[in-house]
Amino acid sequence: MIITGSYFKTAKSNSLLIAIFLFAIILRVSYFNSSPFGFDQIQIAENASAITKGDVTLIGPRTGPADMFTGPLIYYVNAPFALFLNPAYATIFATAFISLITGVTIYFLTKKYLSTYYSFTVLI
Image (cartoon, rainbow, N blue to C red; front, side, top):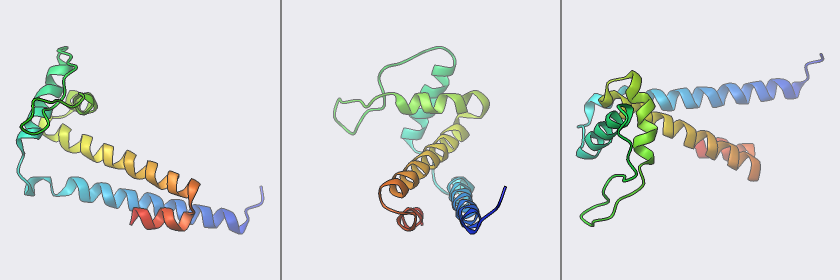
């Protein structure tokens, strides 16, 4: 196998991409003690714990003072983390996981439809 200059350019951009994502995840989870645990996070943690015990639901969190509810996707995303972690930490790591998936998706979409330059610009 002959290694060309484009291989090193790709390896360099992949290393930069991984470094940016790791830095973003570290920033997301490192200062969680500095912000208060809100009522919505408590609601998500309690319902995720209930799901892990077998109490499934199709009604998500309430949206404001109206009697409207969103879908329960946030509960089901938190449930696997609640199996292995304290529910308070599960909400933090589930949020970091959602952020990671969103960042990767936006990166690849902008790389596909625009260019690599714009995809790195969107990440920063």
